[in-house]
Image (cartoon, rainbow, N blue to C red):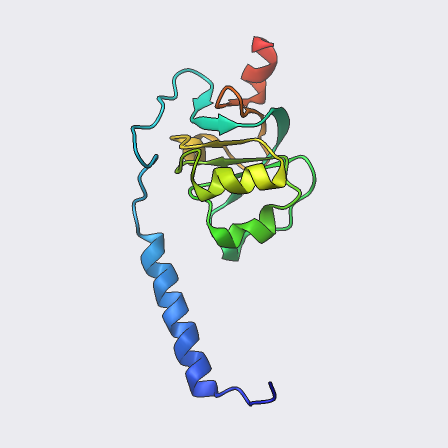
Length: 153
């Protein structure tokens, strides 16, 4: 299509998209849809998981604007997995999300990518920082920081 882009219409659409993103950033998402979150006690964080056990370095995604290119062996930690993250998480070692359940987009995406995930993982954002080494056990639904993972093995 060789129709020129109307700059006024383009700016209006961009402003609408920015406003929608700003509204979404203020939402308080439920930790798990359909039930209470699994309690995280001790060193391990708990949630609903699927997949094998892997160890990798944490990369936190606060938003698409702050997302970086991932390397192999990196564990994506986010507050909520959105469809837009699908492009960015390809090649990651695992996905950890504070919100969601096993039928949620994040878990479905992880299954499609063939990587483990733990969703509905309360306090993951606060307790896991960029660069931290963690072990994600999808089958057990746990995420353990390295110091604890090595001492419990």
